[in-house]
Length: 222
Image (cartoon, rainbow, N blue to C red; front, side, top):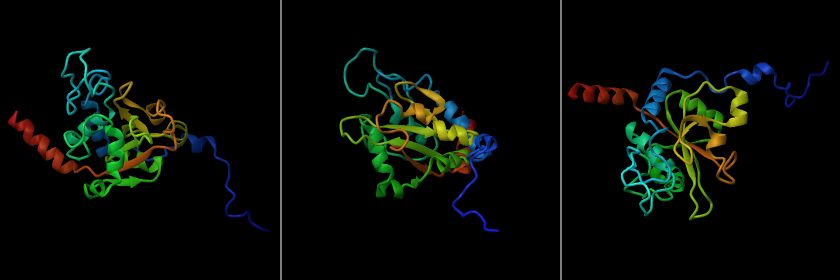
């Protein structure tokens, strides 16, 4: 009796759809969750006001004129990197204006690679790495030099195959709408050409042992 060709696969089942795509959230992933929550992005890095990039707190009066008052996705991601002792392109090396696209270019540049950033080929791998407690970003570089791109954090989450296929990775972002837990489909909806094929993923290892020791020392001093 002849067997079916190797390329023929059984159709996905309901069990396949509800299975986790990217593993359980590890202990480092749970710690990353808590750090993301500690940033209070739902209340800080608000759009249409001038903010201090590292804290997300408004630092100029509402209604005042000048640059850096649109949205603050790239400042939020850079601030989380600062909290985790992970460098990415940020002020003062680059202004807050059009920073997201500049970060996207930087992640894949020799400077970004030298700083420890690595490209991630798929959404499933990006979510898996985040669940393992690594810092993962998802970024869209605008093809138009004067139009902003967008960047978000990939948040640890026990995501199913069906959810990943429909909504993409779990995200935390500042933008036109800030949220600490959402999905990539929503994060990039306002950027034509971004979702789903225009985004890219990058990862950096977090030295949790060093961070925990640092935070412990700071707590003792306080």
